[in-house]
Image (cartoon, rainbow over all chains, first blue to last red; front, side, top):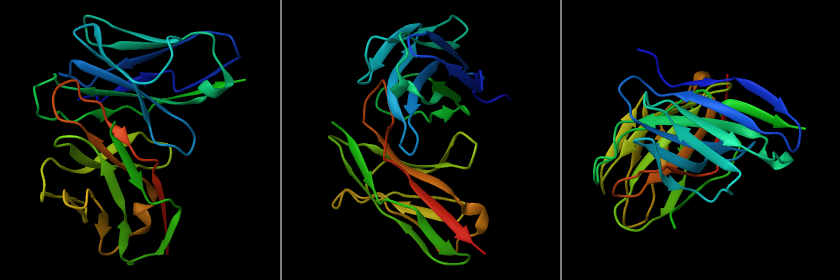
Length: 116
Length: 113
């Protein structure tokens, strides 16, 4: 059973460019969350997708956008890249948004983005 | 909003030493608490969790107890191994749907032979 997969593994971009990162959730999962982890910091929540809609968003500008496809995979898009966007981007998947119970989030290995 | 504070690292211990990594949190309601581990070059793995007060999470010799009265969730292990060298993150989720995970800044543990 494949876990959460992300592509690409590494990416180098220049300031002002746009980037798209991809995530395939763990088999059977329908919810995808994205996190940004700067060097030496804990991951910061960007947003979460369920049923192809953004359900919750962290404190990130509109330059960060996403999409979820009918097969539950997801993309993270970042426009007008800044040097400060250099980070490890983590995707996590889980099963449903079941009321007050917690559904464990499984993390992918991440995409390392470097902005020059 | 929710927040997690954990002790700064790096923490360097000799093999078989006792480990404690402190973690305190701020949250409304009844959060669930977690410890994640990140080995070099790898993604985050859930190490253990506790979903209500006084619960003890345990895995691979690590333990943490959900203390609501002190808003703490300290990670402990009686005898660390070199293979435990990693970064450890304390985290929480709030109650209700649309769960997101709020992480601490991480504590790097280095275990030397």
